[in-house]
Amino acid sequence: MERGGAGRRTRAEHPRHPRRDRRGRRPPCNPAVRLAVAAATLSLAAVVPGPNAFAAGSPGRYAFTDDAPSVAGATSTTDAERLEPGRTYKSSLPRNGKLYYRLDLDATSTAYVSATAVPAAGTTVAATDGLRTSVQDAHGASCSFQAARFGASRSPHPVAAWGAREASPGRTLCQGAGTYYVLIERVGADGSSTDTWPLELAAFSEPPLEHTGATAAPESWNSASPEPVTGQAVERAGGAGFAGASAIGPGVWRTRIRPGETLFYKVPVDWGQQPNATAELGSASEGGGYVSGALTLSLYNPVRGHVEEAYAGYRGRQASAGLAPLPPVDHANRHGFADQVKSLRFAGFHYLVVHLAAQTAERFGEGPYGLTLRVRVDGTVRPGPDYAGRSEPGQLFEVTARDRAAATPAGAAGGTVALRVLAAGGIGAGTVLLAVLGVWTMAARRRTASSDASGSSGAL
Image 1: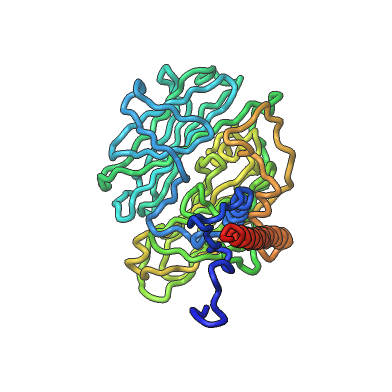
Image 2 (image 1 turned 45 degrees about the vertical axis):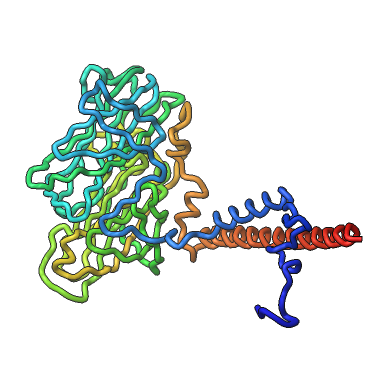
């Protein structure tokens, strides 16, 4: 804008700088206009993603749940702090540590607690190193336990293990309302660094059924190895934690991954469906040798319970790690014997977690490396069980139309519709904002004209 001559604007003509009155005061802005501008701005911010909205996680970094409160683990059950179902917490686990947390449960709901350990980049971990999560009743009896270890990768990355208090008429231990305890402890820490690990704790609850269901897991299911998914790959960066996992569905997905990095994805799997996935690491452009367990692909259920895991070594040529065939999701799977069967007990988002071992950089460079995910979800969707209540958090064991739309490639019909809705929302918010600014401008000009007229009559 010119600073002089005929092209120069006076302050009275500029909507952001209305003329002051004779006492030097700005005319008051209509509160309704202020509210409309704020609402339009918030709408636009909600629709337009920020610069890091689709960015993958950095090597060695984990994205904890936003606003998760911190809770200190106690060395004794006497001082254990309460975990509330439906909430996520931050904590920490020292080497050779044993920490207790408390659950206050009713007699009918099943409770789950998952602990995710996040060792820092550069930490030394052994194949047998890891953590163990267990739930105990007030008498010291063990309700359940699970251990998660770093395995063949021997590379520090997030690992999660879950525990449960299952309310069931057929059980005798760990039944009834009362106080229960969650015990988190390091296992196999010999030869590992002495670092304290950050922890993310997530507590969930599952309501009972309206009527007693099956008391045995299905005996037969399609256990044949599924054929690999083919087709054009869709770009989709992974998230850096469970809370920020990127939604994907059946199809071929592609991104880049660096040594030491862990990527999180979530796949909607409904009742009666079988999840399966293969991770493929692209060839390297330099280096040589061999990295054992370089690529790790893990599957977790909706309450972050470990289901299955696959590894692949790397010689600089393309390599893949594929999950073993898994049974369809069924409420009765909890009565099975194998952990893989028992873990597939409810519908909802299941998590695919991919890690590239840090030592890959020593042999083949810092990358990034091409990563392809081939995802299958087979089987016919069946009606879910009739729950006599609400899960915590809500809709945890459901697959909604919104979930499916988020996981659909942009080139498919559902993805196109989702993008159109997003675009319409963006256009709508922008239009509202422009309209409000126009009204604001007109109102400012009218106030200025009125002020000028009032000022002139007063001078006479």
